[in-house]
Length: 241
Image 1 (cartoon, rainbow, N blue to C red):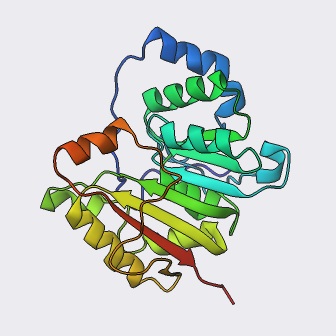
Image 2: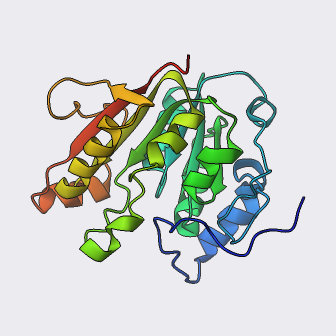
Image 3: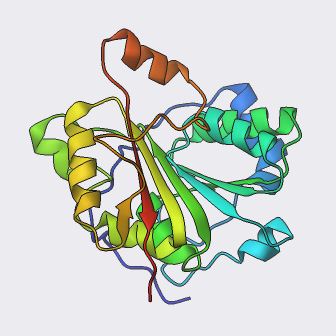
């Protein structure tokens, strides 16, 4: 492949935290990463994806099946539960925090989930080049960092330009599911997606019903306990024709 570039074109929506992993987390990588974690060619940073790298979905999962991608899978609670409950569907978890990846692999292995893969990478690069166009039946983005300070809102994942990136990866008629406990971010998400030619609303009223496929996590309970309302949004990819 060509030599990598020396800078990123856009600010990333995360701060990569460093820290020593526990013995269990290290063991998770040693024992389970060969099966679950995709080996991705890098570009400008450890979490980047080389723009010429491509995922062969059918070859990786060993079959043709619907693919659901979760961006910012955290500890993996939602995606492991979903993968276990729907073995006829393939799942891809995109996460940059190694402790979360380790927990996800441990939990997936504990219940013998085989239809799940993980990628340690910046999500927009996965959606814009690594995944084949139209390969995802759904993309989930639950509780991405709201970057609530005004000077940091430019780092939010859901901002102008993102719908085209997500829309490239989602099949016609496929769904983009979002949830946040931060009102200002929810309003921005809705405004950005309402203005996007790639998507149309798949809900009535102001907000979508809570997605029943999203398991209740400690993070969501914490937001509720603090009095923050959880808001869901669901958008459908319009036809490319």
